[in-house]
Amino acid sequence: EAGVAQSPRYKIIEKRQSVAFWCNPISGHATLYWYQQILGQGPKLLIQFQNNGVVDDSQLPKDRFSAERLKGVDSTLKIQPAKLEDSAVYLCASSTRLAGTAYEQYFGPGTRLTVT
Amino acid sequence: AQSVAQPEDQVNVAEGNPLTVKCTYSVSGNPYLFWYVQYPNRGLQFLLKYITGDNLVKGSYGFEAEFNKSQTSFHLKKPSALVSDSALYFCAVRDISGGSYIPTFGRGTSLIVHP
Image (cartoon, rainbow over all chains, first blue to last red; front, top):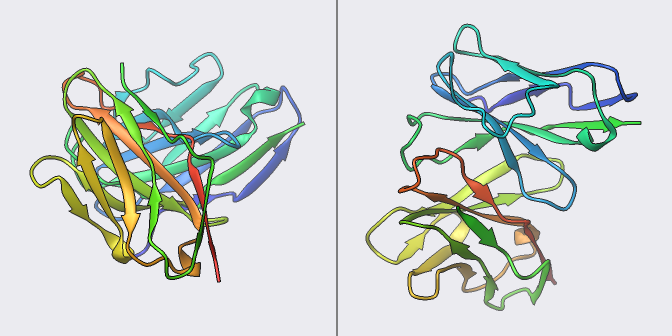
């Protein structure tokens, strides 16, 4: 079984530029998550999808971050414009379970973003 | 509000010795509790979870964790550590009574197993 795929693995941009990350979850997984992991901290959930609908985006900075999962499969996370404090690893995860259950998540390798 | 604490930034143990990685939590209702492991340049991997029932939960790679409601703890344990267990370990909690689907992760504990 193929795991969660993410691209790119690394990205360096200047502040105020835009960036997009892509995630392809495990086949058949209905639920998809985006996390931000700042160095020295645990992952922080940004947004959770179930199929192509948003379950929770209460921790997503909507003035600059956006995410979509149009066909209920792969997803993109965008930052526009980027700030220095957005430097982090962005993790995508998926789960076969429905939101609200005691799910375990399967994580991708992450995209390391450096904003200069 | 829910929170989780991993009081140790780093745990050092000799190969073959038992290991414990500590986690305490705070929730308003009842918790779902999880442990994940992160190897360098790789995503997090699920180890084990507590939902309900037996307080001792067994997971992958010989790890286990004990849920202690009175002490609000969920410590990760392994009877005999391996060098390959060296990694970053994260505890996570979700308050199933809170109406939120958001898990909260701890800051992580770096486990170093010396040969």
